[in-house]
Length: 504
Image (cartoon, rainbow, N blue to C red):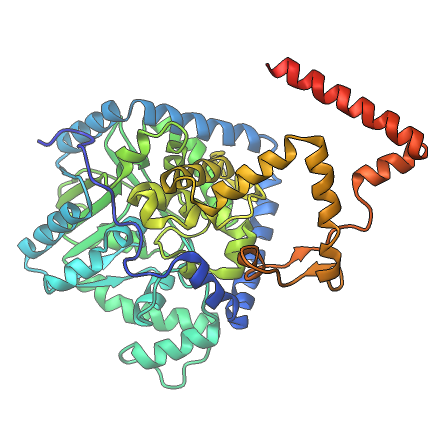
């Protein structure tokens, strides 16, 4: 058996050939319908989440517990993975180790083709999107049917997911109806865009697949090392069908999804549903352990995927991104995501968590622009149920990218210039005086266009016009005119010199 946590190359969590985020974001911002769809959906989810979180007086303690469990598991990941393999094997399952996407796809396609099946049913699984499993199966002559409603919409529309929890969040009901009428075999030509009618059409379409499928493919929300139990939480019941009806079940799981014991699951089954769907608990929580003769799948395979995770684990500052439980709470509060949508990120992991996870799984250079796709407002950290400090990791990854680019990087030049100006009270005063010229360029308190190289800023956003009065001017006025200003200036210089002596 291969060694737990094998040394692995970087993964393929980004979508090859995608445009850089700044280019894709501009295109998304020009689509008013997309922005309306996103704003409506994310605001609804935020409201539901806030209501159910407020019901728990110990919510912050639960967050801290989830963070501690994840940190402990990652520190001892090799041991817990070995225990998971031992327990799954003892209960009739087979464990496979996949160093990267290519290895995982080869394992899964080999297992499927060995059964002779030409079709498989899938539970919603972002990790299989990460490795491009559907495309690999198609190349082997196997058709994968997505059974989650939103994933089915994306698949039939030949589209890509744009949200971790709600992959079709960028579509409205009218668009979904048009996709079903165009792509779904046997659909009623008079189909309306009511949610009930759309769900019924999908249910009829999927029923045949559920009843005839020989192979089911799933991801896993959690794996419990002490018993080898896998867990999937979902809201539609399609997961339960995929996990119980086929003769063969194949689960592809990132190695970071592990938790040590059942008691740890108590914490996450309170954190996850509230943070994701705004529910107290998931309608369907399915768990299975190995193979049970005469009940459910009679062949179970667990594929443990690295695909850049050990490389991420090696970074003390960035490894906390592996704590993610894929709830999508950070996406729903992010002002950048709400305006650009998930496709602009060019990654299967969009939003704030994608901006820190994708560059680490694939190598920062492959997704170099993503850590800069944030205002660093901190809303993602406040919303994260396991307290991933996403803003700090974003800054860390930005620093890595700037360092890799060398001193010629525009951000490095800008920060060096700012440091030089701010290191001297006289230079800082001169800069404040010069900045007042910006009022000439402002209209209604905003500067909408600046000359190069500052045009890079105003190409995507407005800059605030400088105020009519600087803080220094206000201070002098408040301290009693010129004499007071001179005294205040001496005081500030004395304080500055004392501070510098103290640092030396």
